[in-house]
Image (cartoon, rainbow, N blue to C red; front, side, top):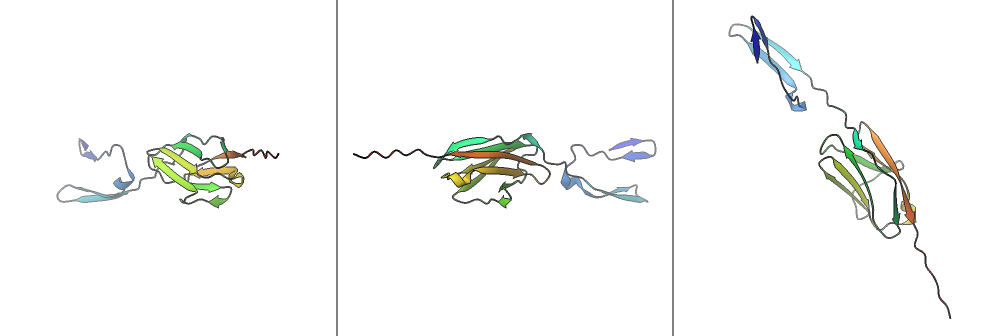
Length: 137
């Protein structure tokens, strides 16, 4: 708080969303109130997704980094939303976000997107098929 003559100020440093609300200045015989609204900064990408190539039956990892630790993200393949399962594993540690795709099949190839709600990052997954050789005598 600061006071300069009859002027009084309340300064809030390192503003957070939870600082939003009603504030009142009480002089004893008078009160003045105001409402503080806090706008969230958009969640951007520090590091975008990169194209990945992996082998059939293996695991592919797509990862990126966002500007806010533990910010919620959603994953898509094309326009289809992905959810945690035996096939898809979503990991997040701080600002690092990762999608693991297990037991790769050729049909898993395609474009994958990480969506922060504010921005999107996309990359292509290429799946290399296994080569089989039949030996007959």
